[in-house]
Length: 466
Ligand SMILES: Cc1cc2nc3c(=O)[nH]c(=O)nc-3n(C[C@H](O)[C@H](O)[C@H](O)COP(=O)(O)OP(=O)(O)OC[C@H]3O[C@@H](n4cnc5c(N)ncnc54)[C@H](O)[C@@H]3O)c2cc1C
View 1 (cartoon, rainbow, N blue to C red):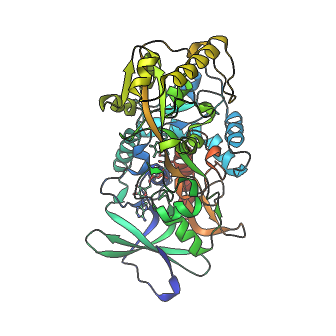
View 2: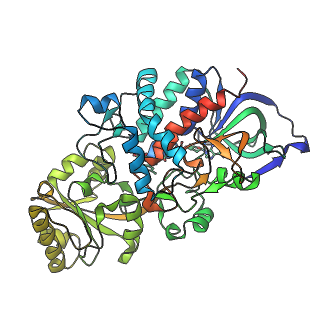
């Protein structure tokens, strides 16, 4: 990936008003917003069919003050949401970007529903850590596959062109940072230069580039990467070459509950409903409820880099709303036993230690107590036979660092000024999670992809020829 000096006289076979690299949630929301503003965007997508990490996600987007929340009597507002984001990010997230996503997430959900027919509702039977109101909005299947399919259908219905099977390999830029266009390559070797008035980078982060993960996030260098392999850090590499400001490169979304060896996501609802994790010695090792992102590294620190997640049939019935959980059940990842001692045998661990841990937790639940790690339990979290367990590991889902942007996605130079015609959204841009895994509030990924995608598409359209 490189940047070519426009003075070298590259010729462009085609010219478009707005070019977008990447057709995940960010790229498609940007293209739909630009179309509404009267500009036809062209997207370049590496895959034959757009999927990205968006397709691998649960498709849940947090938003505050929506009509879906009001219909269920959920009190929430953008200020509360912004405060939750910033609290989880330890105050490190750019305030203007936090404000923009918190204010615009509700309108984004209602725009996708009303204008593009996405049938959202709000998840109301469990909450994720750090959100002070129920505000996760999802589609009926609770899958990112449904989200990307519906966004792609909306793009097709709006005659938006997606050039698939095509990689953006080089940017052509002038010495003042103005982007002239992109050099692309198709699988059959054909190369094409596409010129543009404005460029949006929506090609996600560097989770699929082991060298960059080693460089920026050494603690996850050997972890399973659970995101889209085509996200190879091109935005960061181009940004470095252009002299862009890069921010929070150590930030990422991890997940401490991926069934192994089945590689299926076990929803964090299992923990929030009262599930616990123990290592191969039958010991608990931390407050599991602190957040699934930072918990990935906790699990990877255990012997064998795995843990057992233990819960019951009631919790499974909540988790079953997620297709991934149902898939884990179908694949035989979940063990079941009538007694905790039998479950210990199924997990091949010392029964005495595990049973002692389990009994202590159940006692704390009954009394609404707090454990030695600081985790607060409550009586509704009590578990009853049959008991269930799944072997899990920690994984890297996506990176949160990237190009520093302003509140509409314009990429910033090192001196803080904006590039004239370069925008970024989603995983290509620095998110709102600060510089560590612990700063990731659930939903920050699709939040910044979809909301900033829309804002960047709208802003870019004002600069592109109609
Ligand atoms: C298992 C999993 C579960 C998750 N669950 C959630 C959730 O429920 N809620 C949430 O908010 N977030 C979740 N996330 C995070 C979320 O999926 C991402 O933050 C979000 O999808 C990012 O969207 P994006 O458009 O930036 O990137 P993507 O959806 O990854 O799209 C980027 C696209 O760019 C293409 N591309 C990259 N480089 C090039 C290039 N040079 N040329 C052409 N094309 C290129 C890629 O092929 C890809 O299709 C989850 C992630 C994972 C992995």
